[in-house]
Amino acid sequence: MDDAFVHFSRLLHRTAHAWRLAIDRRVKASGFGMSSWLAVAAIAGEAEPITQKMLAQLLGLEEASVVPLVQRLVKQDLVQRIQPDEDRRKRLLSVTEKGSALYSSVKAEADSLRAELLADIPPEQLAVTQQVLQRLLVKIGTV
Image (cartoon, rainbow, N blue to C red; front, side):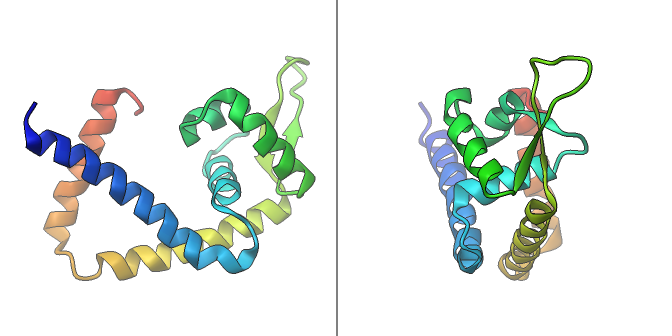
């Protein structure tokens, strides 16, 4: 296997992980850990309430791993479960007012961090990077 491809994969993974950690350091004062704010951000970022299965997919977790996370978020009043009239077995997730405030805070910190980190990267390089990442997502089938 070509070392460049292996290096690219590792670099992509390390960059995504480091990005989340950097945001986590910024929002540490909020008292919410990475798993909480990532989940709240994933739910808040959707136009409509989502299922736990979809949340698991967005977070890259097994469905069973999301259950205790959702229970904790509901208990913290960051997320609420909604039972749609058309399917009494299904539960949808949406953010509460408190969850929305957390999302806004994390988003502001993430936006500020992104601006700092990308400030000295030429726009044309950012455009190429975004195109490559978008093409990868399409090929993987997540877009």
